[in-house]
Length: 520
Image (cartoon, rainbow, N blue to C red; front, side, top):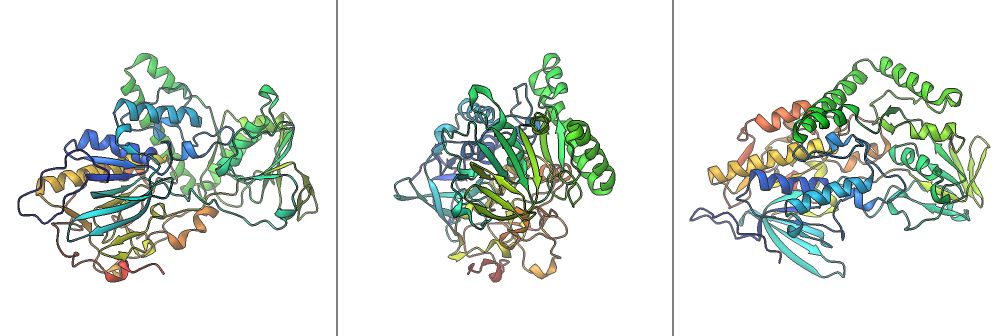
């Protein structure tokens, strides 16, 4: 069992069974660490624990080890609202982000609450006891359980075990190495090698210039990015000049707050502009690309068949990707793969790309709720039959919240406001002496369903069938408007007539049996 600190004293006569901790946080990455810090600040009377399947904290930033791994959002919004980002670079590399997270965990004494090497393999809610029983497995397969009043998943949005596999024909004939960025080999030597990176997203655009760097003689001979479809790129400095200037003049927290406000507003403005006047944004981004590439600009390679922000913009700090192209160290080929062969990749155009190494930066495979089987009173939850509530809870699932970040802004912006909101709910439960909070949806046909993600990205479209439902209006949707969400989550009524508060006992009458059906 995993003990937490003493739980909140329960009102006399309640049926709720005792628990090991009030809140169990699954995952010690950005989302989980953020929730732990918010609980300390906003719910000091609640006990909590964290479980992390890996040996280290950091989530994505510990898992991915490919060259040059960095944020694709500025750290003044990817950083937490409560902890200023102090580094000079606002587009930070993985080690700097891990340093930031480790400092927070140690300064706030959160590390002692984390149980590492604990993979959650089941979560079962009992309405009679008003508690979750969570089953964990350690690195040698031994199982254990712990109990909590509230379950908070900070387990990310993709499958840690299995990336997306594009199944290229003939790959078994290739005599070189094939590597997926999610499983980068330790001390991988690519010096002097011909490398082909398949993909055109943030990972590919990070890897290409990093593998061309010739420091210590380790750079590749040449890196070719092979793309099926071009991507829209946005060039910006790796350093935020205003942030660094303000830090010299103002207290750190104030300088951070101003920079964060500025960057949130600019992100929001850019996204709205792209949706309202896409042709103007296309022209703007194209002009910047032409200026960055000069005579290396190729219209076919840099003109996507979709508008900006129909997929996430790809950030290129200090134009490093384009600088590698101008230096002749990298190139872009736009084509379709016919097959792999012994020496490289045969393209449908007839061209052949020679390669010693192929990097398959073909994307992630999405996962819901960390692939954890979640049961409510014995019934397996099929997430595709539940509606989001407030972007973090789900229809008819009690005492449960998750974090799924924004597609058009930094992940942590959502993580912060979700953590704040859940703390508000917990405090309301304390004040009203309630033990169960359930977003009740008695009739799901009363809602008009809408595509949960208005984005055409392949990794999203491939996973729509497993994703929770999204309605066309609040609160039953995963919104993509941080400015609106922040106001609603911080100031909107907790007891809104939908989020229903009760004590331990039978399952709530409003729960729709169809929504709690097993996923067959």
